[in-house]
Length: 234
View 1 (tube, rainbow, N blue to C red):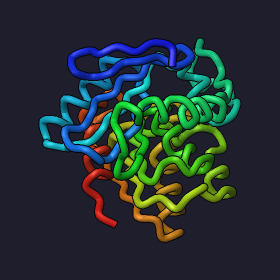
View 2: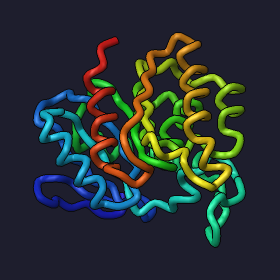
View 3: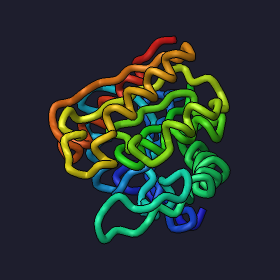
View 4: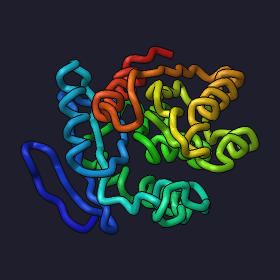
């Protein structure tokens, strides 16, 4: 842990250049949800939405990420014009998350009831990928997850999760597949295939379609995913 300080009653620290903000729950032994976020502001918006709906959870937001590396499970060519390729650094980042960030965050929160992971876009892909690579998380919210990622459906079909999750939440905007990009246009079909695969294993999973495109209401959608996995009763 490189630095630590209090900010508006929340704790902030950095680990290897990643900024971590711990929004501590009101009650002891509450769940902890780890949210990989594109920036600090998005995490604050999600926390605000959760508070407004009376969800008492330790929300740990990690930002300042190397987005195309930390969130990508393996190397793949870019699907965006003039954008760098995906370099596949997720396994390395997941090690940092589980070995360094989680212990430091839970020194602040104290013992947690259970631990979940959530994310939007590429971070939604990473959240699901993490279940195949570690037993650290028992619940997952993949919100507008980039499940169009080349080869990921095959990866999910060919690998078993490290631990049987208690539940998984998936959502997409109903216009996300309406794009001329031939890879991005597969997102709804690929998501539905993965949901069916997971449900076929008897794992509780739900898929929600929200109104709008990929960039509509990300904090609200993310909060809804976290709210769902928090309220789920096995």
